[in-house]
Length: 407
Ligand code: SAH
Image (cartoon, rainbow, N blue to C red; front, side):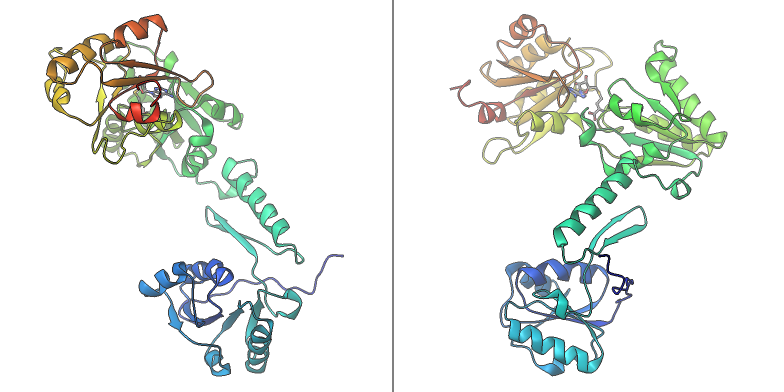
């Protein structure tokens, strides 16, 4: 039977005294939400968990280090009875009742006058689910609703942000699951999506049919024509009143020419915002099981474009300096120039035995890792027919991840 005798309501607790009786794990779960609501939180308990102690230390809650006394509820607006002692919780209930204060009971909902729903938030909406004493079910329903809102399968259309402008969205390293919640939301709100080859393509299939999809691979190429054409298209569509998402793999500001787009928008007076993405030089090794830093092994990591070969007049990379470093070097766009880069790093001082991992198609179907050393890199790349996109990790962190191979 559905229970209509529970009346749902939101509370404004800002600055109001809320008493939590008990300092254990139930209290620990409730207190952060009360702090977030800016309540004046008082915890009454002879002992508290280390997490609550931390909140006391940071001044977010007041701790009364003793047992409960009825007077604790004077001036209170809301009470949570969360001790593991039923008699104490009963005493709290009774004191609350006498003062006409709503009281949550962690031990026995039937004795409570208030219930804490399973809560989540998304884009300005608070989802609160009250189950009839089935907290797991309400949490599951809450999760489903939030997931639907995040993924866009539940779309409250009038809630969409449709103001014109350009949003640079970083799609992460490839697996759509690794894209940010904010990025997904921006995609669902777009009128126009300008997508690169490396942006997580699966997500484009989920776009509503009326969204204009511009595939950068199909725009006219040429030495600098492509980027100019992208700048032109995003500005033009935004000036026509559209909400444009510039969708790229990884992060738009990491070898993504994202800031050129920012400048183009600014010059045209088009509002532009940025949603960062997980960048492949960190995320791809991570998913392949390789940390870019490790205590006692690498206390620095350098992310370097191998797009131009060492010695190229336009290269801004100091390859000799990289040869002298001991930390991790992560090479991007480097498959073609890797043999020469490995040579230059060894000339610069890196041992030829330095471990190397080449991660191809990271986080995507077909991901594979080829292991080598600086000395064998050229041979291994050819032997395994390695093609872009690939991340090349140089340094002892590779041996930390693959000790048997480099023993
Ligand atoms: N903006 C992107 C990088 C663009 S440069 C980012 O932040 O990740 C393109 C290079 O990124 C590729 O040549 C390759 O070196 C690397 N890369 C991007 N995604 C990759 C993936 N899934 N697997 C391996 N390398 C990847």
